[in-house]
Length: 218
Image 1 (cartoon, rainbow, N blue to C red):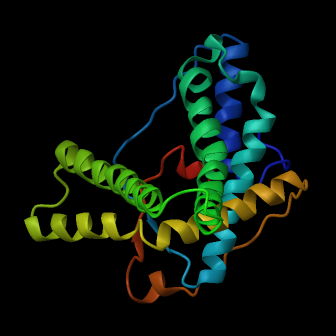
Image 2 (image 1 turned 180 degrees about the horizontal axis):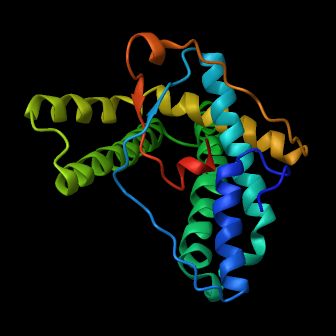
């Protein structure tokens, strides 16, 4: 059912199956585990990380366009009414808005259009919002699964959840914008992420929960 017109075949396959089941009143059931164990190897260089996140964003936009007929259609249930709108407005359009904010606010400051106080407020609100989402996700998982028995482990993770919003978030945003630009020019190139095989010699490199958002890409 999935085809070669997207570069995130896993997301495309899942959405296509849900669409097929709804159109044909198949009454199909879909199982989901919120706490899988999956070993994967993270990109070890910025170049490979760029390829990965750029392809994920490109594939997300392709899937949203391909399945746009499901958007806000009650017959497709939570996928059409919640999941796809979220990915469209937050993951796709939200990326553009955030990137423009990083560009326009400093330019407005240097152009004398906004005051230093407003610039500082924008920066603080951006960091607070990103930190709230990251820390909230960590705490929600901990309250649900009690994954970290030692308090120090949780504190370290919370610290990283805050730090990722300074530098790393902006880097990933830059990579994602590249994916949107590739989508706008009609690119269908599947960029391969090269791995160095660390997971085969020194143990797993990353524990990654498989989720539909992750299928926005793999």
